[in-house]
Length: 305
Image (cartoon, rainbow, N blue to C red; front, side, top):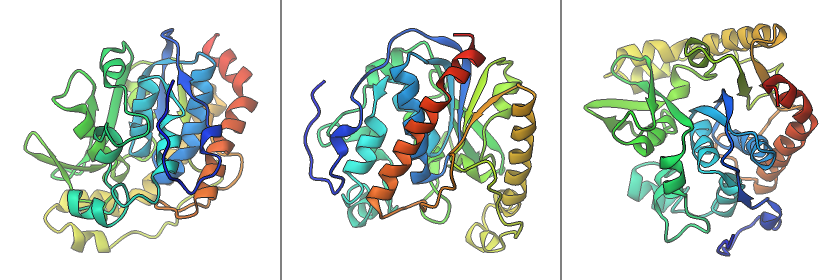
């Protein structure tokens, strides 16, 4: 596969694997936590999965998890990490030009729509024709509730992914069918319950924080001022840390019972949502690769492969 060359500050960009996943599908649901550039960990895990023929029949993603999940469905090994690292310092993606075009310092559309610019365009045809389910998790600003948009069952799945990755306070809401949406992590940071409710017996959850991490119990009050026109959204968001910690405990218990399989960073993750240290970002990707390889046989056993 030919990849365009580009100017990047990451000298080892072309060490990231290049290739296509097979068409073989394994029954199960892959649930992907968000976390902006912490999602590079997830991309390392997903690349190992694709290289080893682990293509689950359903992918459910929040924010960065939704963006990475799209490339998993399109079968493009290495694309997410390669694109994020190659364009980290391109102002069309993050910076002034992104702000002009999208009213946000981070333009998610750049990763999906600028086919003539990107070193590796998104394979829309394979994404759309894949038999795998794909679900983007968003938060409805009017109701404050979690909304799930599924490929083939919504008018514009890429717009839903953009909404899923639209960070509160930093990016404007995305309008879909008359409603406004933001990051799915505003109401559901760890998207495992949907998969359970859908009846999936095999669920692999990829976290972007180590298993000991918990958020401070402090509740946000600024959100009520920033989103005064969305009181239900503000109310739910003000308690999101507490809900996140509850989800951490519940997924731990579910994993111990064997109901779900959890793969998480083997060390604490310290990069910020809009990290500037590109080598640090790349290290997180390679940590995902390392952790996935270390647990590959356990994952195959859990899936019955």
